[in-house]
Image (cartoon, rainbow, N blue to C red; front, side, top):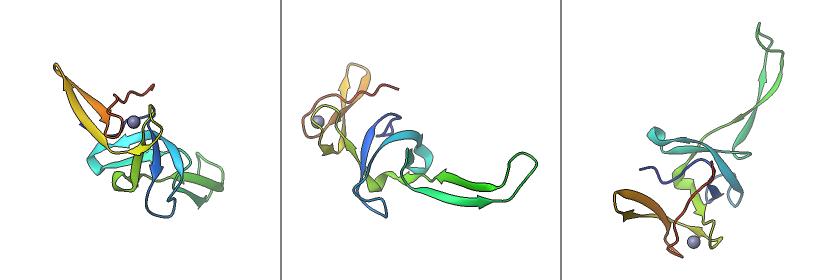
Length: 105
Ligand SMILES: [Zn+2]
């Protein structure tokens, strides 16, 4: 089970965006990466093609989950994600306040 889900609030803990906060927009479990809105945005100049005009395009690059920490929606602290079993359901829990982490997608 991937630790992060779309809609999670996270804080960046390493790299050029260190200290910033954002919301996960996309998860890439195979690469252990996530795309966070407004984080790791690169500008790329593009030439005219048949389908697009020339100009500067902004590309949000995925960031490694090793460089982010979840912000717990309950206690508001940066935390590590734990898991707990409730019957057959595996839930994510905040390691600090032990509350279940749910996101509205
Ligand atoms: Zn918490």
